[in-house]
Image (cartoon, rainbow, N blue to C red; front, side, top):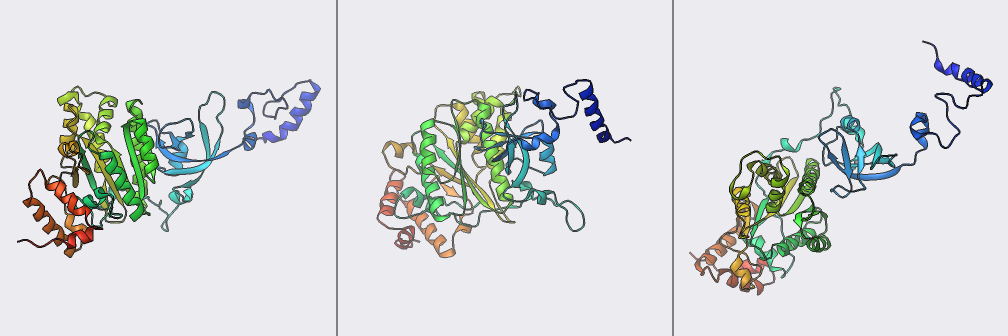
Length: 423
């Protein structure tokens, strides 16, 4: 096959004799030349910008890097070939160089992948000693076990809500917790107290708050109160945007757990997430109570069911809120479907909230499965004694007496030490 490069000087000389301005394949001196007809080697001069974002893969195969987890104008397009080449997964944190959008393009385009989750991308597609491809750990292949390490929330004498949770419904690494709350019972305050206790006692834990269909002022308040990533969608946004934000956050958490890290997601709320999926999923033709499509139950259950303590290392803790007593049959249905799926439940009481008793926690209904795994034996014996003493008290005064006694002590250790054994 003849070398086409040897013909270029002859073509150039011939074009000068024939007074031809442009030779096909040769660079043009005209600034008005169409960008698409420029030679490929001129793209080296295109300015690039360092970008990073969480990968969100579309059904068509390509994806977008989301700097803020939710769709925005700062998203960066990544091709399907790059995703396949580096064995990328949804939720990977990608860093690289991107070019500005061309004509009729909306997003930046990723030219080079520099890092994946802070590591060299070539290692994800490298070769092992026997020549086979190195496999990444899959979240679904990790072994789920009961939480066996206590996630301490107590930071001092106040707030009482953190101390009550540590005693009544303790949270462990990998817990799947449900906060059942009527309106105006203080669930948002409890979520902020949980986040504050985690940030102070466990600074190495990665904290994420996923707010679905929330009020804008609540988003601002929680963003200023929580030291972590806040992935929020307002109630006035389309249902697809609300569900997409939650899905990207969950995939990011899974990728971090695969690396052996401890992740905590505060979800507010499972009820609104279920409502959003009910509006966004294709209808199945069947309808449950309150007009709820049964197909819409599976995605939020998939989200909540991802919480687990992994035997190989790492954990994903999800503390979600569920709304009850709202007057909506759909909300009651969602709670009934999720009741019993978690291994920790914290119930808030409307009557206590109406009497301005905060935290309005229903002590009798709140508990944690296998809580003995979270405490040493002496502490667990003291907690059993506490439960027996609370069982003697009248239901209407149980929480108030407990809070008054707890407020008189400086710590939970002091409170438990003050209890006397009753047989």
